[in-house]
Image (cartoon, rainbow, N blue to C red; front, side, top):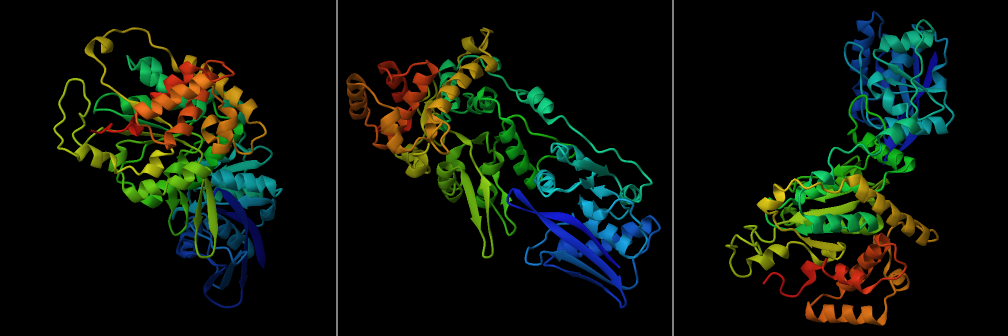
Amino acid sequence: MLAKTFGSAVYGVNATIITIEVTVGQGLHFFMVGLADSAVKESQQRVEASLKYFDYRMPRQKVVVNLAPADIRKEGSSYDLPIALCVLQSSEQLTPQKSLEDYVIMGELSLDGRLRPIKGVLPIAIEARKQGFKGFVLPLENAQEAAIVNNLDVIGVETIMDAVEFFEGKKAIEPLTTDTRDLFFNTQNAYDADFAHVQGQENIKRAMEIAAAGGHNVIMIGPPGAGKTMLAKRLPSILPPMTLHEALETTKIHSVAGKLGSRATLISTRPFRSPHHTISDAALVGGGSFPQPGEISLSHNGVLFLDELPEFKRTALEVMRQPLEERKVSISRAKWAVEFPANFMLIASMNPCPCGYYNHPEKECVCGPGVVQRYLNKISGPLLDRIDLHVEVTPVSFDQMTANRPAEKSEQIRERVIRARDIQTKRFEDGQGIYSNAMMPSQMVKEVCAISDAGRTLLKTAMERLGLSARAYDRILKVSRTIADLAGSDDIKIEHLAEAIQYRSLDRENWAG
């Protein structure tokens, strides 16, 4: 007898429906065909133990499991549950009242028949609804995540026995439902960190506001303990709230990577990722024999914070250059290629020298001649070229730390950022794939960032006197456009240019001595 149901395989951040067929006939042995990896083939032992635990039997006949289409590689242990149910139906131990073919079924079995959570539930649920399936049967711990998708019956089960009784009609399991929009709008501004907790550092807060308003990348240079990490962690709290589309896209990536955790649901706040400097190239940008998203994709629609930037491996930093420009990562293998989105803001921090006290107002730098320059040269010019704001962070004085003056809340700063982003949305409504000032190509900068003769004279003087490099020119114009947007000005004024010029520290000639 032939039994059939459906599962799914995830490639990149999208799912593909897999047909699972089982037939039991004359002969011996268990056969699995359809390009299954070792984890899938090992399901025979898990399925047999689970069935025996609930007094079912594994047929002592020839069992053939087919996973179609046969040219797509199937990986992981999430096919256990559909294979087990098909084995029961094919061996006439299960007489379903509800057809297995109406559902997508996924789940890993433990030896006592309990279901373990799986990865990639959200893209599978989206594909199941798209293909017109009635429901999705999966482990109970993943049900909240799948319930984000409406118009799909999400059936969460704890054991294989629950699934058997559901299909036999002996147990009624109500589909789990979630009001996605209500959940999203109630939690989209739930950040723990707030700029109201930061005493002093008003100039750095201003730089962070400009970065958030224009989507600019930032590098902070300052001694240890100056507050670089503390300020970076608060940046997501002033970014515009995510749209529902962005939230679903971000949740899909975290689901595929298995980063959501049990009973997790929609990610409604902007992600903040801070990998350690020992991270490998593949872990940063994504990869592996079966490609998984890296840190830059996990920070999609949010912030990627690289603390102590010069300590990262040169190769790891260089592979970020293309994603910073294209806002996506393409990972190619011999037989296939996958693409992960990577639209993130890069926030980096670094000490000015190995000892950390170059240009410190009170402590003396003990680094030898040329050491500071060699330290800065660990960051390549092309990578630095993609960072718009260079911000010098100085330590907060004792008086500022103990002043207890009320600081501006993140919510107030966010309102100004949203107004500036609204201006940019209207400005770039005809530009394909351009949503902020930081994304403007060079040819658009000349049109959008027009400056007066007085502004041109100021910029020329600044570049000559400060020894600014040619690559600083476009960056200064982009940042000054954002400053003008924050001020609600249609034109870039002298004061906007002057403020933008001061955010190019690392481009100054002889900055490192």
